[in-house]
Length: 633
Image (tube, rainbow, N blue to C red; front, side):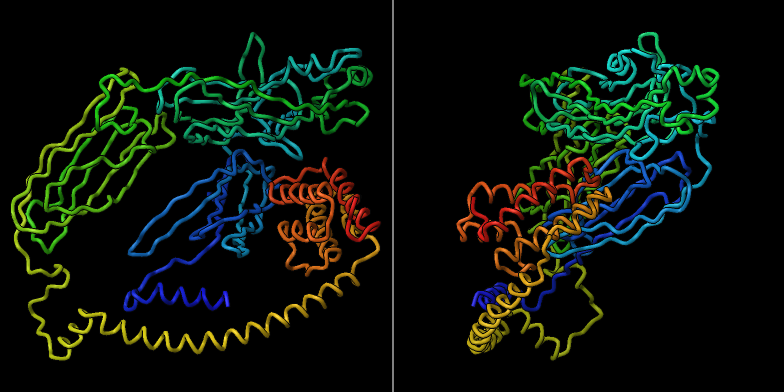
């Protein structure tokens, strides 16, 4: 009955729309790569775009093991309307740098949106040997090379021997002195809406493989990441009289959205540092052995690896509120330096036509946050929401460019009207004062029209009697709607009656099918429900481990709780556990484990270190249910 009522309500809702058409754009999930051919030290942007989805539950990105993820996923969203077709989108972008040259195929990403599973297309990236920079010929190991690295090898590296470990040397003190993260900000005090440039850098004099494990989220700020060419991520800098290899982890411009002490959050990087033992070097002819063989060419007994997690220190920004003194009534939050231009498309038209008034704001500042100026329209003029277009350079600091606002309006009566001057104000952070911009008043002359839109006017067309008949019909749409509605409701009455009997029969059949399915699931359950999970654990296949664990654990719970496996989800599991009187602690443990597994499935990089812990938790749950079918404790 529920299904029938939904259909009935939908039909009732759409009855007044008979004779009208709505164009709905199709839901799509696509992947693009730009550029499709790059040099080995250059970067490409991978964009995953979901269009026209009402709700996106999650996205599983493709494997990016062949690339260094410099930035991402960075999220964007928006809505467009083109010729009556509305398109809304959510995009996720990754800045990628290849680990090697060759042709790489990025497999489809997977998303769940509006209850459906969507897949992108495959994309192909070609990486050539040419590049803005050339690799170091000395085979010196970059801090961001290897299995989980972020950057290619630098052009050159500092000539130091801090990676050589002397016997009895304090390893922790050596690490603290020679590798760390530093946060640079161009200012520590600003007004709301005034940009701050923040740069996270890794300084190192050691040989290591590094991976960013925590990117700052910049809560309380509007964020624009500043992209850079691949070669500019690496440099050599001198700090406190010592030269360091410096790698830019992230560079962004931030626009504070509120006053107060705002924290620029820390970044976190995991490092696998490779030290070369001094005794090995001495026994093999001196320091030249490293230059000849490189770190990768040395035997394992010559090396000592140390794993360390680095964190930057948080930086506090004093964000000052905008002053209340002399704040104009027209001020809406614009901070920067701007100009204002305005005017109408034409000064003379008839009441059949629509007028257009355009305002253009040029300059630099927090332009992403600039809203449409308010216009006080004279009586007799009806306006609509403005069409907004922006041409912005977001790599400039502050953002520069222009924003235009096109207002469409109609005039009811003929006459002469004066559109008053439009006022727009902003705060100049450099001068610490408000400034007011105004346009000139605009006079328009409106003549009396025919009473029909201009697009419908055609004096050369003579209407026949048949056309006049249809004009009369469509002018009085109730003549159509009432008879059609009566026919539809009569048909619905008999249709609903028939559907109710069908649904009752289907419900009985479904219950019988569920009983058969549950019996089959229990019979098919192996002696060790986690046998494939164990195989993946032994193989150290982290991605496969979490996929198989998720599947086997849900199959086991479905069998034990006597529900079809295709209906199993966290909500159903909780309900069935409660019905069977399972202890609350056990139910919470199962829910937490399922949450942890999902997190590993949907994050781009599965954590190999948690495999054993999660397997043990799943095994404990399986064992407790084996001892007692209800899983009671």
